[in-house]
Length: 327
Image (cartoon, rainbow, N blue to C red; front, side, top):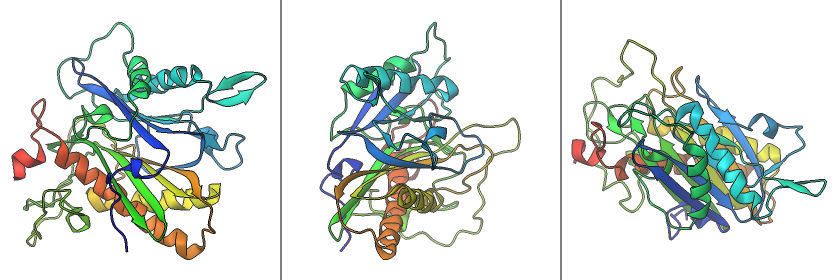
């Protein structure tokens, strides 16, 4: 039987903590996914406007196969500095890839575009480095959702976006996801009050979604005009021991969770990216059937995390929340 973990969070995967930090003046923030030890990782990019740091070195055949943390941040390309702050904090803890007596923390990061949410963005020195450092210090197994961390300045079409998480426990393993929902596309079925991910809801996590009526128009795309910039980011974690190739397959499958929660998706305006890490806690054989089960549940967790991030968000900067707009 598949059911959410006790926290309904990526932190239901043993050994995972999450830290958030925000800058309210700039309406932006950063989130760090922090395993208690280095974990094997894979990453899958699908959007047309990707903004990432240190992901090329995670490709098959690379020397580095594990990460110490993953950073998600607002700030567009400026926000890539958040990973530097995370690296600094982890170096102080002695964590990282050992090189001739030194340690180099391996911290890939991805960003969303949130520069148009809130007031003017003005700074003398990039604030995202500090936000990354602060996020490490705030890492816990319980954390805020919605307008929190990298989700503070997120928007979802015409609605306020946000930070969400979800999990499943099934047949002896756990899988969880965390997402920053910031798409150009809509998370709501046009002409209804129901989220695209309504049928995946678990235990009322989305307020008790109604079965949607038939929509006459399923297209609710971005308006014509100047280029927009958005992006939805997700991190999947599991305790099932997986190889690099198996992690890549789960990352590919998990991308479908974004498509289950948002329409349109993977557009020229989005930088949609999914990371997958394994804490290697469950040392059983990951058969093709097991991988299929895990990848399917991972995709559902990603979709639920996106929907939950929007559902938990509050109205901000002229963007109404889902709850204010749709009840």
